[in-house]
Length: 201
Image 1 (tube, rainbow, N blue to C red):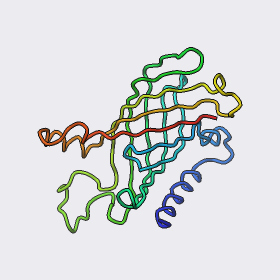
Image 2: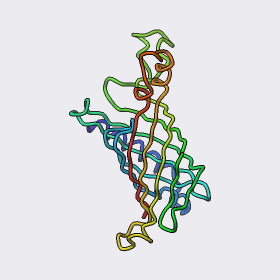
Image 3: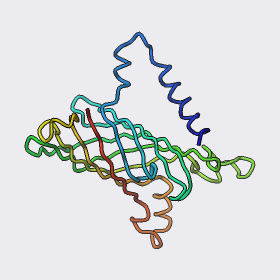
Image 4: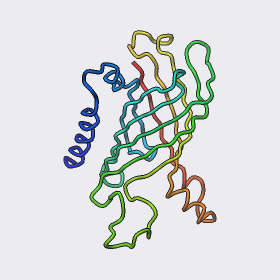
């Protein structure tokens, strides 16, 4: 585990090191708009992350998550994920919240494990024999979210907004295998479900 945390720390330090310390605007960009906790959903048995609102109307999210799978749930795994989602539809729920019913998105996840690498060993497999990466997975997703305005519901809690969401996703490997084995696989075999909470302070 220490080896994977060391690699992750190096990546974080690299990105922080690319920021010009004299530029306050860039520093503020690093401060996340949300803290995220997610259960399942192809990015770990449990994952935590930081979220950033994009676009002036805050209809887009970019999230960065660290995911963990314990030994008891299939073997210890660590992953990092970069996610993007867009919220084209907004339904106001009086003055206490909003509903975003259909939010398409994409994300990339990378899993750290001794048996997984970015590409297959060229000494064991000819070039192009397997098209996918063992560790890197591109996904498509579709989520929905209800966002509660805590200033109207429970101001004393100190949280501005709480978003509760569900997210269905699938990856390149699952989708291609589905179309190659339509008779044997169902959509339930292809799509995974994650449930999460987004806290905005």
